Amino acid sequence: MSSIEVPTFPKIEARTFANGSGEVTINGTSHPIETTTLEDARAAILARVADTATKMQRPVRVTTSGPDGEWPLIVHPDGSVEPDESLPARPAPIEDAASPIESTPAPIDQVPAPAPAPEAPTFAPAPEVPAAAPAPAPDGNAWVRQAPAPATEYPSRREARQSFLTHEQMEEPVTQGWRGALTRAGIRMSPSESERAERSDVLAVSQHWPGPRTIAVVNGKGGAGKTPTTVLLAAVFARHGGAGVLTWDNNQTRGTLGWRTEQGPHEATLLDLLPQVDRLLSTGAQSADLAHYVHHQTRDRFDVLRSKPMALAHEQRVEPSDVDAIHAVAAKYYRLIFIDSGNDESDPMWLRMIDHADQLVVATTTRDDHAEAGALLLEALAERDAGSAELARDAVVIVNQADPKSTAADLARVADGYRSLAREAVTVPHDPAMVDGVLRFGSLRPQTQRAWLAAGAAVARGL
Image 1 (cartoon, one colour):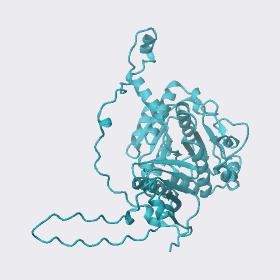
Image 2: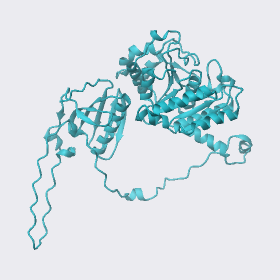
Image 3: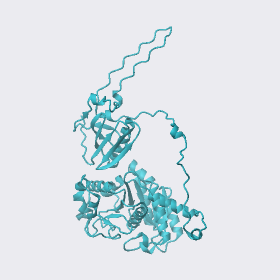
Image 4: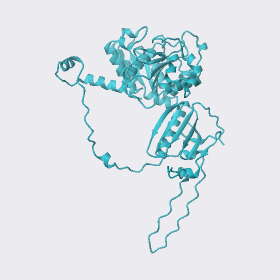
């Protein structure tokens, strides 16, 4: 009997079909599964649920249903599975499983051994073939088994031939510089390498990934540029990739994300959203309901979930379970979630953000204390657990020339110092439009906009 106490949050349901398709629904968000066999679909669903358990750092409940019935399970972060004995299992009736309409493969531990082939005539008597052992009774673990290695597949005739519809992608003509002027005058020219690189970065940030992605912007030192980095990265992805981008001020003490962005027609903060989580996660909720709690950026096309910087920390204390709840709402309605973090890396609220993150961005300036704080954070995360170590290893570092007196050599020095700690390090030049007031991407100088586009592409490569 299982004695483990597993919370019911998040709500996870999984369904498989005999053709190898299925879906996992986590807090109302559906994640389609497309495979070729029932066993592969089950393995893919198990991997998705185990990933959720890893992020939550605890076992999670999942109700599975398919051709072999309904099985409530408990999935652990290490991928192990046990039956959830607090809920009844409902195996499919034998006659349903053998229905001529849909033939469903039985779980692996119920498949009877094949009958032995007839022995060829020989001079010696054939050895006796032992009778197959009776198949064990089904249990809660019968739903998930390691999928067998697929047999070698050979391409069909249709796959082997080249389609008549295949054609070479034509490159758009140049638009920038003197080459662009000649093209507009009627002399078609190919783009320069710099314009090709810019187009590649635009393509990178324009992608839509399957399922939501969470990007945490961090540095344990105040003034390191976390809020400008959060705002301008969100602007890059929303301007090029379209709607569905949220920035979230995950800060116990005077987060300034709301001060650096436009305010909507209300003063709502995440404290107003928290009591509405259950309603917003319900099936009757609509995306437009979020407009009561988030502040839309009319020019840069993303939304802002503010904290309440006018209140003292003890008046707006947010618990790790609150972070889980807010993230569940954000993941239901947004494809990209950029989280602006506080400075206390020991705060349970900060640590829970790390558990939900898919990508880490370290924001820093050319100041030595800012750069050192970011490096120490990556080294600490590398020792926390396997998930945090992977985030640190794949992090992107954005070095902002906040001080107009610093030089290009200072930027290069800090970026080079991070390249052994993170996946990529990119630099952003000084821009007066980033110093104070509301941040708007269109107010930046062209070279600054290009630098933030490159920074966004570096982040996109990790998603």
